Image 1 (cartoon, rainbow, N blue to C red):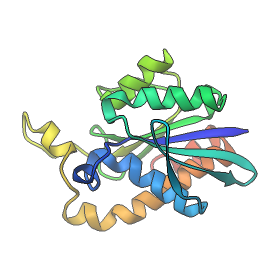
Image 2 (tube, rainbow, N blue to C red):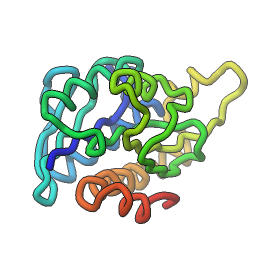
Image 3 (spheres, rainbow, N blue to C red):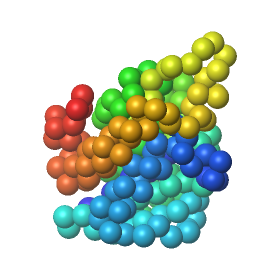
Image 4 (cartoon, rainbow, N blue to C red):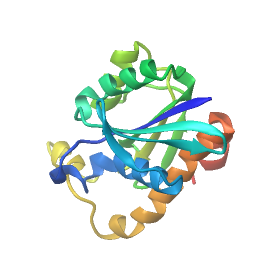
Length: 187
């Protein structure tokens, strides 16, 4: 059994600590947990290892958010990973900060990274894990907000939330999406 876990984000130091890059942060925590390093590879940085007997590929695409689907499709085809064994980790403005929402399928909800994945895979029926970043911005300031850095209380709570999301992602690999949803949604 092979799994592809993709944390969405943007490459480059200027984006490293932004809300939009939370997918990268969760991917990094997962790789740290299963003790595998990221290495430069096709379409991004890839960590490859095993978790409880299952082969896991953890990807941080270097395509920028709007072209993330190219990286997902490449690794899915290269490693012959079925759609149901792919998990896309992303930020979500519609959810309060730190809220965990794991789903088997859904719309892109205006998220350009998810749009790209759906476009490349020709379906919206793929597992995704959404990290709530809330919508605490004024009209016309959405881009500044998602590309802004964590502040105050969010910054304090972030390590615990990233740990929780990493555990949910590893539960997806080991126990399956339905068990992971039951165990982690809303937590």
